[in-house]
Length: 286
Image (tube, rainbow, N blue to C red; front, side, top):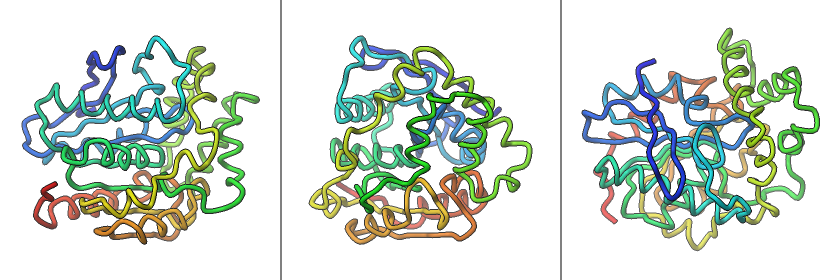
């Protein structure tokens, strides 16, 4: 492991986060998704060492997930959780003296990245979205995989969890023995009593709650790279096409034989795309 797990007091709770490469000038903050057991380490542990030789990398456990503590009041709306997570990111940046950072967001993490642009756009530079939320409902019914995921605790066995994890992938054989490590790490996280109680409350009551308004998307000044696995069963490819249509300076890469976890199934290409994208053009001034 070439990163350290640290803690910082933020917004009334303690944030746990992975950290490496602090000697570098540029910073990438990696934001995880909302699948059962998700946190900064389980989402990004294979990616962080590949970027930390060139960038400062930070991967927080967003509040409500992983080892990050909870606020006193957890009876929050989805938008209140979102605002709390954006403030959590900003406080991490302030603590480390980071004026501006790049964001990489997977699934819910992509939605948080877009929300951060709406809240404090001047603090962020290049944005990478991967199987991202934010497009709102692109279908009248949610994917069955999403329904099964949100109802996981009705049958919280490790066998059911392993099945769920494989649904995030197009072909689990590609990652070999790493699958069991991912299952173990995430299952340990999700089976904590406080996590089991809180998890169902973290999701929006309506798909419209996770939609970034088009009027906000078209005002984004940052360069945005959108990555999407063609066979993603959790976030349909139409969601990324929607974001591509409405974000002015967006580019889209869609790959066949790839599911929701682009960074795991297509690790080398993910690293190549993100590194080239961040270094490609002059930094944005907002």
